[in-house]
Image (cartoon, rainbow, N blue to C red):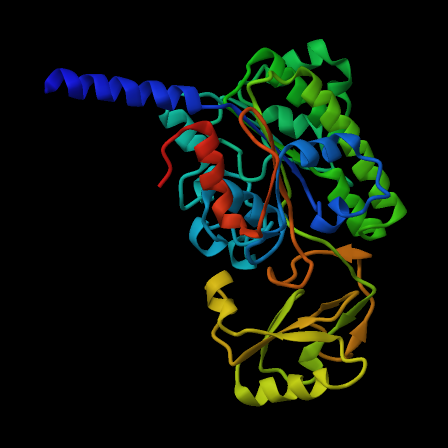
Length: 393
């Protein structure tokens, strides 16, 4: 009996080894699902991944649908209220700085599970990774920004191991430029998969998001950045070993923002974010319902109130919730209902907003062509863990 049990355990261990696959996660910040449906875009590499891989119809994000909380939810399976990263920046009463360091995390991540399994991890400008237990790490850290680019010096100061930037620069001199843009990130990814072959590599591209803020999503300029990103992905795949699975994903959708509607002008009894106006009382809810009935109200729809504690349990209790109309976001001006936006495009909208979805495409070792229904962003970490063949709660 003991011998049979031992043989069974050996077989299970062997089976786990055969299903364990290294994973390259490429997150294209701001890659809205609607880009993938635009047949006019010249992105042959992404089209190939979609044609040969597993394509999810859309990923419903977390609240708020902004970069740092979303990227943390991807690799923890937790919502912001649980993992502790509530925005890109910390609240004003905590100083308002970015959530740079891992000591701000309240839960474990995929890189923790990877290390516990005796595997190697790597990351390139992934949010909330300063001081992380990642074997090869170029954290998202900066003193200065230039669009989607971050200053090389700050990334180098926080890198693990300390000589990693110098080693990349020795093979790819262009990596040593003042700004770490998406091309530099791609060079770093090529170096890591060629040199270290990590079991988990988290890569965060940023330039599309920056362009969509400046010029608007789905514009000529944003489309050009995405087509260039496709070229960068092609370069990475050329040197990526065949046993890898590649996950193409993103953190949030994107919307045009031509106007800002300020519902506080109508009633002060509101909690307002760029993508949600939460009426604290029934009286305030009736005011917004009356406004929504007008032809040019700036209000798209009433969000099912049960969704608020589900997606944003850290938001205050409310009687009703509303989201802004197309090409519009909410603001907090209490004097004028319509004001001008600071950017031509934005995110941070409610996760279930119609057509506002991020993406997930899986391709490579053992992935068969298929189409999957919409999924929650909080389910991605479990799927990644299955590919890696590591234990996940």
